[in-house]
Structures are given as C-alpha cells and as structure tokens.
Length: 272
Image 1 (tube, helix red, strand yellow):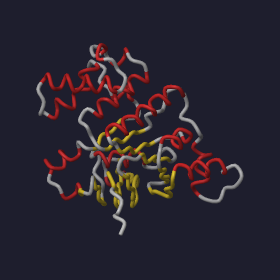
Image 2 (cartoon, helix red, strand yellow):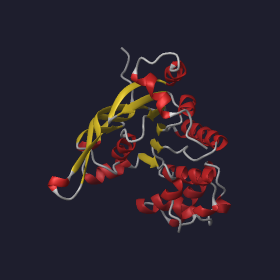
Image 3 (cartoon, helix red, strand yellow):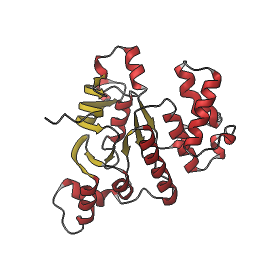
C-alpha cells in the first residue's frame, strides 16, 4: 500500500476577515480568506498566483503567524499549530520564514548587513556572539554576499543584493519552509534568473520547501513544481506547472476555465 504524501505545510479550511473602522455602524468587513485548503509537499516549490487583492499575502501572513486565522488549521510537518501552547508554537514557527516583497523596506536602514542577517539569531537567544557571527557570515557567503561587505548598510547594495540579504536573514535559523511574497518584483530579468537559480540550489542543498507568491507567470512555470490559483479569497485551481504553462499558452485560442482566463488578466512578467 502506498503511503500518503508527506506535506511540509498545510492550510486546512482557513478563514480570515479583516474589519476596518472604529465604530460598529461604520465598520467595513473584508473577507480575505474563505475556506482555503493548500498543501505544500516536502522539498518542492508551490507557486501561488492570482490578481492583486485576492488574498495571497493574507494567506502568507497567517501561515507565518503574523496574522491569526478566524477559523481553520495550520499544520507544519504533520503537527497542528492550533494545538500547541504559545512557547511551543513559537519554537515550531521558526521552521517557517517569510521573505517580504519589498526587501528595501523590510531591511532596517540603520543596521549593517551583518546585523540584519544575525538579528534572528540574537532574538533566538541561544547563540554566543562568535557563533552568531560565524553563522551569519556563512549564510551571507552562501547567498553570494561577501562577508567583507558585512559593515555596509542596505542603501549601499543593489536591488538583487538586497534580496539576497533578505533570503540570508530568512534562512539563518535553518527553517524547513520558506514563503516568498513577490520577491522578483522590481528586478530585471537577468537578476530574476540569478535569484531563481540561487533558490533552486539552496532547495537542493538544504532540503527546503517553497511557497512562492508571484505575478511572473513565465518564471513561475520554470521555477515551481505546482501552481495554485487564488481568486476572491479561495483556491480555485491547482495543477502542475507544465499543465499551467500549457493552459496559459492556449489561452489566446480558447477561454473556457477560470485558470485559462487568469494569465491574460495578470500579465506575463513582473516588470523589470
């Protein structure tokens, strides 16, 4: 009998509604997530695509613990996070890290590159100063940033280098799952390809699982193993990247399913 596939991260029936406004009669309710079910297999890349405002970032925030879902369950390596007490949940959540869309805004401009990368180790509180330095320097070098540049501030780096710093910071705690929110936006095509190649190398060497949120459908089809399509807070389709690419290419000839309509609406590039 075949064993069930092992998932690195699962969302089961997630619901999230945001409320705006101070007074009860003036409040606006926005349903960002509605019964979202998503499963990321071990050591694979799942791309999440959809129109702006469809709930992709809200889902990412819930998965890393920056937002709490109203209902549903998040399962990490077979363990439900909702059943854990706060200290245990914090410890487990280190296994999931997020790389934000705008690395320039996400990196503290007053910190040096070394301080930025080692900060998660400082917050962890389990490492000596020398251990933090060694781990951060090794991770910087692994992503292609020379430790000789450790004193530089974010403003002294290019867009691609800032993104590498953000990746190094996310990986320094050695997580198993990396969630990336539009990390290719604002980078020219050659830099996008360099970052994608780096991520694939890191995935192989560190056994990582990726959830990649992106509008760049061309890059997604090459980078991801599977593609999930989100619309109005729901997952409306999930397929292999090869099938998704074939649907996108055939969209101009026929429009018969929601997934076939979506590529033309989103565009094919993140824009350099």
